[in-house]
Length: 191
Image (cartoon, rainbow, N blue to C red; front, side, top):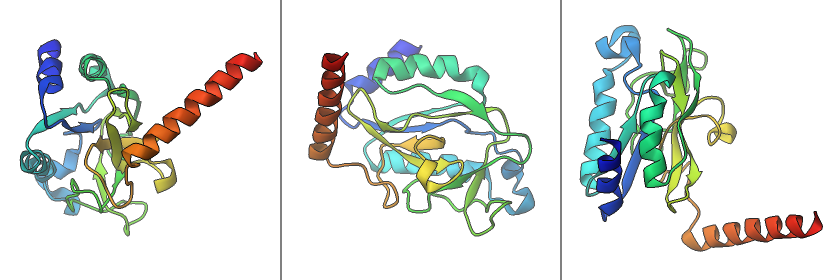
């Protein structure tokens, strides 16, 4: 029941959140083929981190066809939607931020073995990042492309901060939102 899940989350004091647009789409990772550790280690770490932080919510799917249900929950808790799709079975991978508390060393990128990767072997989706309407800030955990494009191409994001992607301090967010509001107001007056 999407509304009950959202109501449960909205009522919580510990609003920790993990969103994953490619969960359980790691094909060979399930069997540790090709040098990958099992995908269940990745999922177990989600549970461990959430438990250690007082609980929270994990939202995930492995296919863009299933985004509608997730997005009903997203809308009800005030975060952006899962969107689009990426991935080409069986070779698509997402770079993992090894400074994230959600990092588990489960493999390297085929194109660049110096980078840690997780598979997304399905038509998986992008997840919301950055400041959300509910006031939470989602930082990339795994992404396609480069660090510079991580916020636009995130495969996994969370409320857990990272050295690589530190969330702005609350005061900074107020300044950013204020500047955006002033810019929109000036544009409206011009038009």
